[in-house]
Image (cartoon, rainbow, N blue to C red; front, side):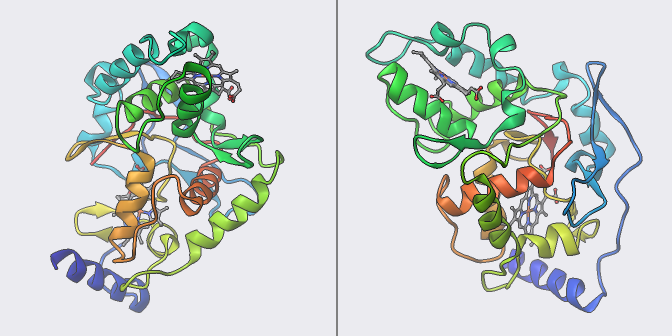
Length: 282
Ligand code: HEC
Ligand code: HEC
């Protein structure tokens, strides 16, 4: 009820121009263990903004500081758990991820910056979570992991972390990636739920405004899975579903066509930002 009320106030402010004040993202730079991280860059052609901004720039100083040193970052525990999974033999073939892919620091470097990508077998975009399942079922004789279960987030965080600092760059020329991008764009701009809000209502129109204590960012995905100080490790589709729930709309299933299209489109909206996984947010 409280959420509905607060969001209602925000809707009024978005469309009537009163209420929460606009606050600029901070003028700050991020280095993680001394490695420069791109948190602000020129937007690609056709982007609604001139500049693409990481969610890091919208967080409080204390939250930003936690991301500067991996040793301080509580999300790194998940990355370590993911590393253990990488080396664990599972399934009827007696293999681990490492049996085929060896040292992830070499073989997975850059991979997380290029996903989701076209998967010719399923004729759909595939993200890291689904690629893990593909390798488990087709290469290891192991069961697919259910959404957010069995270490799915941890292994995803481990793989994405191998691309820390590398700029996000999708290949939309492969297969039907372009039409999934279009579909994702439709989802992004479609108003849903009792509050009649689209992703764009908050992360584009109201970007920079406050909703409760939350400074609204561009809703970028470059830090996922992310570590939320109030609730721990959070996967991307969990975040999408949470934001959709806040509009009081029915939540699409994780890895559904709608959310895969959205992941494709929203990842493109963050083109050029560094992978920050595991980013730290409030
Ligand atoms: C028996 C060998 C084998 C095992 C074991 C295996 N994979 Fe794979 N993996 C492949 C092959 C072959 C491909 C490329 C074809 C494809 O996409 O399925 C691949 C592709 C990938 C990719 C995409 C790489 C890119 O450049 O786009 C990722 C990520 C990945 N695997 C992760 C994993 C993880 C995580 C595990 C353990 C859960 C695992 N793999 C286990 C053989 C394997
Ligand atoms: C009612 C407003 C609202 C709507 C509508 C909304 N979000 Fe959010 N979203 C938030 C708030 C608040 C946060 C946390 C603060 C921030 O980063 O903006 C957030 C955070 C996010 C983040 C994490 C950003 C980061 O840096 O970690 C992503 C990704 C995101 N939203 C995507 C979406 C998508 C995609 C949609 C549409 C399906 C959507 N949001 C709809 C309010 C909203």
